[in-house]
Amino acid sequence: MKEKYKQVTFFAMVMAAAMFWPVVSSWAYPEPAIVSKTWEFDVKVGTPKSVAVPDINGEIQWYWYMTYRVGNNTGQDRLFIPEIHIATDEGDILVAGQHVPPAAFDVIKKRERNTLLLSPVQIVGRMLQGRDFIKEGVAIWPAFGHPIDRMDIFLSGLSGETQAIKLPGNGEEVFVRKTMMVKYHLPGGKVHPERQPVKLLDTEWIMR
Image (cartoon, rainbow, N blue to C red; front, side, top):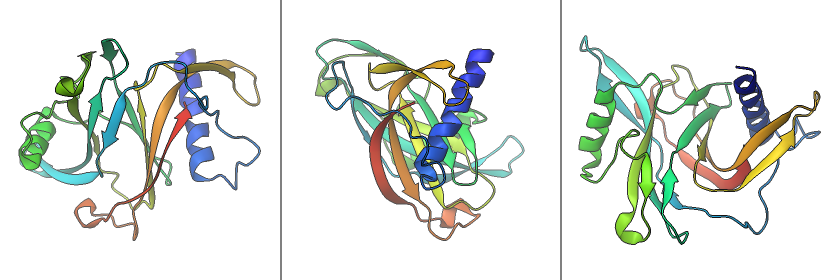
């Protein structure tokens, strides 16, 4: 539990450093090596979209989702266990897949018209090498229920690069991994996700 708390604390620091750099300029999140000495999957992400899913009572619930493709050209087969977090400028921190009914994936797969799309459970496992074994997955999370202006998505499990660092302040050591951070701007901050435009700001690698 203590280790889990440290990881959550560090994630909050990363979010603050990424979103509010002028406010936290005294501390920057650690950066990956310029030239990585370890393996890394090829990944391409789509733009987040909203989707309406009826619950067991027939009431409409809104979710966000983001499709992505992962390929293995690392030189050997590897295990793929994605971890995807979402953070907003309003302080929301969500884990993709939590509080999401199985019906949401069924609705998304039908909407995307992609028979190769794998659920968050199905995509976990061995990644074979080559373009013939590219996997297509989707991250799903509940709509926030309030306006937001910025949404950052963190994708871990794509690289073997790691670091052990000390937290600022208490000096405790935490273990971090190379993570893809994709930044989006949601202009207008609408409450209704079906009316919310989403614009890509930037994609970068960080350690988280």
